[in-house]
Image (cartoon, rainbow, N blue to C red; front, side, top):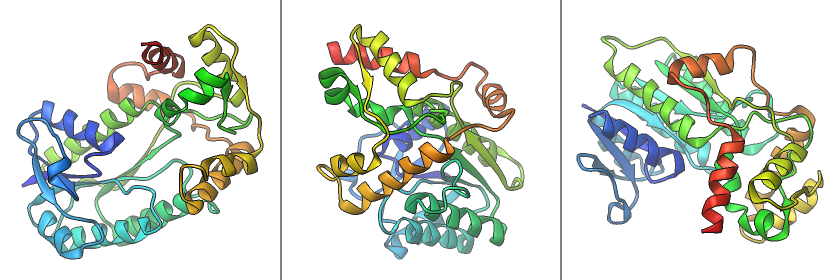
Length: 291
């Protein structure tokens, strides 16, 4: 019986697969198109789609431990509930579900609300699961080269309350460690939630200052106009996603995305090292952009 990783070709899922493979775990990646997937030696592929119930049933029939990561799509909640229900039917008792921090508070943000509904299903049905709740990914900013390095503007309207941004590599490593902990346990473990945060509280202004230092040129914060942000996102993403991102940014500005006391220490204890900082991420990105 194996660890099944959904979203295995995505930013986080691909890293989780690699980390599990390095630790000699029996890993399968659940993918739509195996011909386009590339994984480390020993990783098997399960072909399927989370909206295709039969393919989910086939994949979970050989699964001991499930990593469930759903992409942000209009049918994200349906995908999650199908996978979780079929896992319960198949007797899978080791689950790690990938949610988002403050899913319970950001009730008006579509993809947050969807993840919270899946969390509620996990809790109310008693599934033995860890709910991972990461903050805003630093890597979300890796695709902003044109704005940051080109125009000298940090365009994300994250406001001044502060976000505890987290490096995707730390998220993936914590996910892999939690999957192995559950998979290797002699019996199913109790439910728990883990908020995954970064070590620094970042605002629009402070992030712009970090980029100024990393690039050796002035980068300014574009400001808090989430309507303009929505219009910009619509140029390269569907309308529904642009609006989802706009409402999320509104909540960044009113609520922030702050850790609870002890969150950082808990994560450092799990990893056995300090959490990666946004300053280091920006320096690495700036070096790539120069080359």
